[in-house]
Length: 364
Image (cartoon, rainbow, N blue to C red; front, top):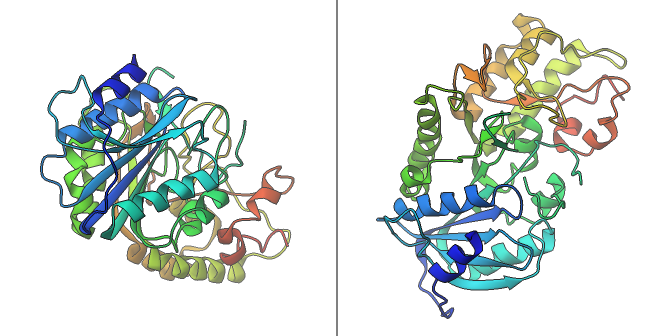
């Protein structure tokens, strides 16, 4: 039914040379998995919110192994059908293939030139965790017939001319992920914890994606307010917006704190630190970054890094609970806390954050 909905409701158009517009935003949806219906609902909400956009909104969508589509979103009030134009059809490609991902982004920017480009990444995700083959569902980036993106491969396939990246996916608001993508965009919006599969409220935020930094801050605020208005377990949301030019400074301050307090062989404490992974069997533990600092280092030595956090974070918000579990500490970011004998440590060593932030000091 969802394939029929997508194929019948979309009109195929020929690609022609287009005039440059102010903004082009591409939503890359990996939905050849259990999120396919949520993806189609999100597209319908985008159409509902697309009445007066200051630019072009494109969606790449894959919901089956047969083919995938690039859509140009247009306004429509009917939430039972998708009316946006299909501007390209792709045959039998893996959305989690870095080269294919790169091709889609290059095609979109070439055929829909703009002064400013934004990217929304919509799918499953599990923070920085290695790619692997409750009553309220969550969506944790990338899963296409079992194949997932490695975060570093995703970064390397991405252009470096983006105004922003929005991760509509679980647990991408960790320092490891944000630092890895710091040179790819000016701003990032992400959730430090999981995200409800209902996704961002695109019917409200679609115009905001085209309104510069102020609009992006409104995107983050609207996401939080949308879920905070629920009175059941869907009242579950964390969100952060960061200014990427400040991430290098955060790593420098972290290294200063580590160098002043830790030596090889020291243990990083995790007991009592606020956890921000709430679904069963999440592959890596994620901890509130601010609470990690408070548990591991003297308060007197943290003034500079807290000041840098203030410069980095444009907006942050959290509901009081997530899936019924209290959130008592929320700094806006998460981090992993490695330990001796950690099976993930060799993989974790690949990330720039580990190398540049001093997290390596207790282990090397």
